[in-house]
Length: 118
Image 1: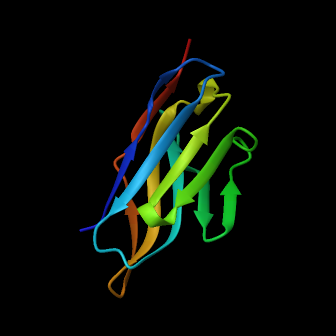
Image 2: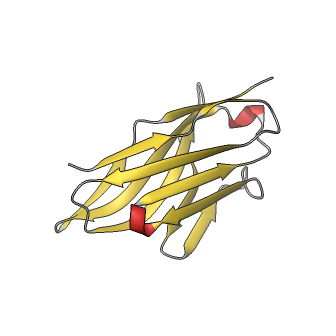
C-alpha cells in the first residue's frame, strides 16, 4: 500500500514562512511527478507546484515566493513557502504519479492546513 504523508502546516503571520514535507512510502518502483495542490474554503482545488524529473512548474500566484524541491533518495518532496499572504490559507495536499510493480497510480495525501493570519 502506497501512502503520502504531509507535515509542516500551521499558523503563520503574513510575511512569514513555512516548509511543507511529503514522504511517499510503500512498494514504489518509480515516482514520476510529485507536487502540491491546495484548496481554500469555498474554492476548488488548484495546482500550486510540481516537479517531474528536472522540470518544475509553479502557479503564477506563488512564483517568486514558493520553492519546490525533491529528494529522490527519500521519496520526499518539499514546499518552501516564503512571504506568505492571507490568500495562501488553504489545505495543502501532496500528490504523486508513481509506479507500483507495473501499475501506474495517482496518489493523494490527506492534507495539511496552512493558515496565514495576524
